[in-house]
Picture 1 (spheres, helix red, strand yellow):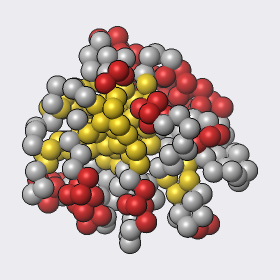
Picture 2: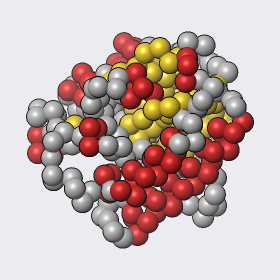
Picture 3: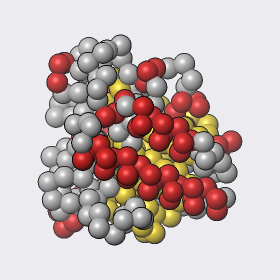
Picture 4: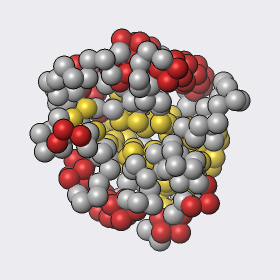
Amino acid sequence: MKLATFNINNVNKRLGNLLAWLEEAEPDVVCLQELKCEQAAFPAKEIAALGYDAVWKGQRSWNGVAILAREAEPVLTHDALPGDDADTQSRYIEAAVKGILVGCLYLPNGNPQPGPKFAYKLAWFERLIAHAAGLAGTGLPVVLAGDYNVVPTDFDIYRSRSWTDNALLQPESRDAFRRLLDQGWTDGLRQLHPDRPLYTFWDYKREGWSRDAGLRLDHLLVAPSLSARLTAGGVDRAVRGEEGASDHAPAWIELDL
């Protein structure tokens, strides 16, 4: 099974990019973030034409997450991250797909920090850690994939001091990610490629793509019951270089099920 995560950064604006990648890469399950469209505006019909069923949670102008499944119907289990009924931001969706449970997440950016946005990021992270602990404890086959908006280590970013104060690199953000892994989750891409940076994001600013000034923000975490089944993974970098591309590239893993 091939599972991918892709921050599409406006699904309707970049629908052509998405459909071309789906047709070429043929992932079995896809987690999308930053749909930036209302629920009724999600391009389900166009995606279905390529053989994908979907569940999604849209939001006007911002956020929005979706899970696509090729030749299968994803069964929705959550359309929001548990722990705060007052949180209206569309950042988490979860579904059972082809025998595994998939959580798709778009963790808050947190900038500027310090401030309320950074506090929201850390609070959301704590809710994710709590929910992930419950999932890990079930022993079920689970993958938590998405844009975590965290650069786990200095190895996951190009040489730069311009990001030092950014919320993506703060000790609190990195500590939260480490505590998530300490539950037994495997960082799929890093497990498979311990010696490669594997950037997944290149800023539109400062010629980030042309300079290969990348960051690894998009992660696929695999539950303990699946870690031994990781067989391959990578980043489809070429997608970032296309005309009208998202500032992220799709990241993916393969599991021998």
